[in-house]
Image 1: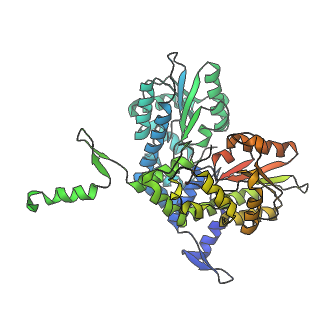
Image 2 (image 1 turned 180 degrees about the vertical axis):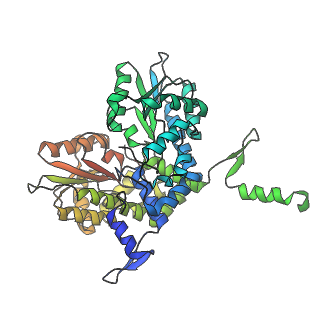
Length: 250
Length: 250
């Protein structure tokens, strides 16, 4: 059984295999179809109601596949980028070079969809070795909405810092992939060093943001697909959550 | 003359009318349909990307109407309740009566949908007088998923505290509405007193939660439809965001 799915709904699903069923007291209960359930599952993970989850529920694999390959993912990302820019334009960027924007990388700037197409759209347990090989290939495409955002933020005068859960040994391929996808002229790329390994992403990323603040930077905004990119301490003035129904990082 | 226009072009034009438009530079760009845009708008407000927003965009009124009256709102709420209970059952509720759950009221326990049906589904500027009259009627129905959650949390041994942005002068009608809707046996109902008026909801609610903590209570969980129910200080161990595309409270 899938640990990422609420027990009640899951059990009832197996009892029914349809959208309606008769309870023991013969009272008609409507149960959600897969599509309806998966819309709600997506709502719950994006609003952080589910908190830790491990794999996409089996009944939602098709939903996630259609979401990621269809117009929804693209449009969700574009609308988030629009709200982000709407805010960014209100920031009084000073000339001292201390106004910064922090971006996560995976599913924020770069899309690993080509990897997940071949790995069950998040329904399989994370395969670190296979994913590292994919990272090493440096072939992840840019997310179009984020590319537009990245470019416009630079034009507005923000300095760009990249803060990723990837490890230091992946610096070269990560940088190569970023250049390939068009993400150039960033100020600094933070990767997990030896002392960061095993830390929860929320802590690791908070510590790195704190370093920026200690150096006199003002973190005006941050963008990430995980709540662990946006919560914790030393948070940005405004944080923007990009959609990601493929995986969860605590 | 009909034949003067190539049929295929004509057909493509009409097929694409909903999703494409010509920019001033005659470059063909895809624009999202209302439905697609409104799905993304909903994503953005629920993930707090939009932050402060005032009214439902005109093009999304039908979307919100269908969402609120259809299966989506109900199913979203049920799945959130499932995740909430899944967590609540992991809490070791001690026998000292200090394990508490904090609920917001409007769009959390009680539904004001009957009011919004007559007030443009959130597309109109908030009418305090009309809404106060509705509150005074004490006719708001229970949200079914929250009623189930409320009941089961009590059975699990949590003490229930209600923390609402409604004002002290609405105590009697609020309590009457809660009883009418079946929300009985709560420990205490917090409403805005004179000193709370004008405070942002995030601050007011944080202060009240702090009072609970100062009295030795452990806030194991909280449920609300607004991020201002869940953010701030003295936050619960876990917070659960219910859907609400009707309005935003900072």
